[in-house]
Image 1 (tube, rainbow, N blue to C red):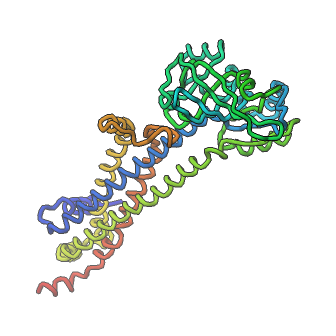
Image 2 (cartoon, rainbow, N blue to C red):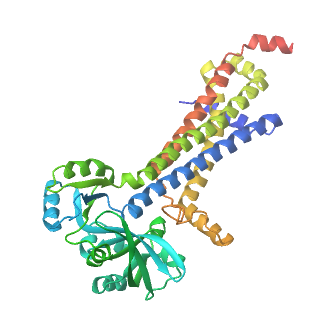
Length: 416
């Protein structure tokens, strides 16, 4: 523990107004550098946590965790029996729902956009998807009661569509020889839109299962089944484990095939930014080394007097360690305070700036979300503070030890 005398002297040196101006500047630079590094690191980690949360709760709540598509052209005749077998085979599966997927072009006047149409059984879909969170109760009732199209808000805006408009859907057709036939035209009313605030709003449309079968020419059964699992990161293992035991031949696909790169990119950016900003803090801490080395040279006379009066080397070390730690603690506290406040409100600030300039930084047709998500994790804050303080302490060791090796006789001889 630090002696009271060492702390008192160290505090006086740190707050001394008679200190060399250049030393004060370097000391202030170290505080500012540590504060900036700590603050920005907390912000970056909060944003990365936010992206990871939105990937799990928004994107992966709509797209299938696991998808089994029939190899046979006849499809899966009795998907209910298949559902029962799947649910019994693994406790990790939370829901199973049928689907028919087809690529199409959707047209409104002269506007034409590609879309992925998914035929679903609404009641079964609720067990594997959170789609109901993004539509009103009226739209859900309309979808159950009539044949119509549920479209992403982004596509509806691009095609200038409103609820109640009739749209034309062009579905490509192949003959028995796999030759391209003229597309099949289907006219459907737009019964509602869903808005997930991301890329899916520009890609997807939903129709009833029987309507999708009619549009695609699917004769019997369904194209495949979708699964929801309790842990999305176990989806690849569960997909293989169950898929190899099914009584029908299926193509096995999980969410990582289409969107796995997003998760890996988030983790990569998180790691790279953590390393870079930790190095920024380390560079700022080197200013503490410079400050203390110059302070030791300036205070050689004081150190000689302390030693002559009987102060031990350990106490000399404590003086300059405490002086350096004050800079580190000050910068860390300021940076972490600003970082925590920013981490809590960065999304709102980002949205305000977008509203102010009238432009979006994250476009929903490019990124899987169109806003800046943040999630402050206190363990990240604690780790950041710990790293900053540790680097600050390490930075004080060399100058403090150097101060303890000052020899009073040589100092007195120098001034005599």
